[in-house]
Image (cartoon, rainbow, N blue to C red; front, top):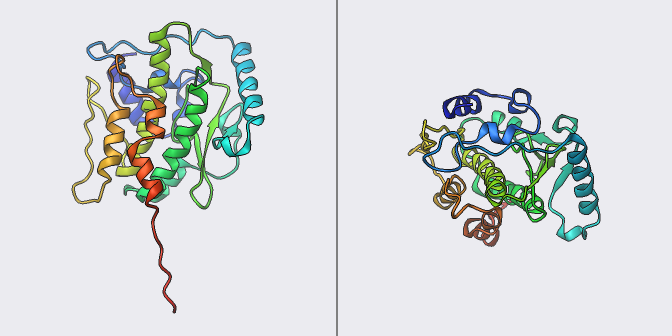
Length: 249
C-alpha cells in the first residue's frame, strides 16, 4: 500500500474497523514512521490466532488481578462490536459536530486512553487497532478503552517494537486532534499535517503541542505513551478543573 492509498483510506473511512482487516488496522492507517521512506510501515505481526488469543487472555487476567485504584479504564472484548455499554467516541463526535470539545473533557478522555495504552506498552504489547470506535463514553464523559484480540506482542527487534508503540501513540494523537479541533487530521504525501485549527475557535495551544509530539516521525527519539499520560497539559488540566457556579433562581 502506498502512502497516498494509506492516507486516502484513513480519510475516507467512516467506519475504519469494518474496512481494514482485523489486527492490521494500525499499519494501514498510519503515515510512515521514518522520514524519507514512505514505504516503511510496521512489520507483519507474525503471530498465530492462538498466540494472540492466549495473549488476550493473559492481559485480561493480569488486569483482573490488579488493585482497583491502579486499574486503567479498560473493556476486554474479543471484538469491538461486542461492546454495548456507553457511546463510542465516534458517535459522540458525530453528534457534537465540527466543533472543539471542551478542554477538560478532551483531557479526561485522553488521560483515560493513554493510561490504557500504557498498561499494554508496559507489558510490551501493542493495541493494534486504536480508533474512534475503540473508546466508549458514559453520560458523564468517563472514557473506557476497548482492548480486543487484535493485540500483539512486541517482537525482539527493537525497531519493530518501537514502530508498533509509536503507531499506538500516533492514533491517540488522531483522537486528540479531532477532540480539540472538531475535524479529522489530514496528511500530505510526505506525511505532513495539512489541516489546521480554525483561527475563529478557541483551541488549546498546549493540547495542540501534545498532538504535534504524538505525530512525530523520528524513531531515534520516538514519542512514548508515558510522556503523553504525564504531559504538562494533562497535569495542568488535573490541577485546574473547571469551576461551575450555581446561582439561586
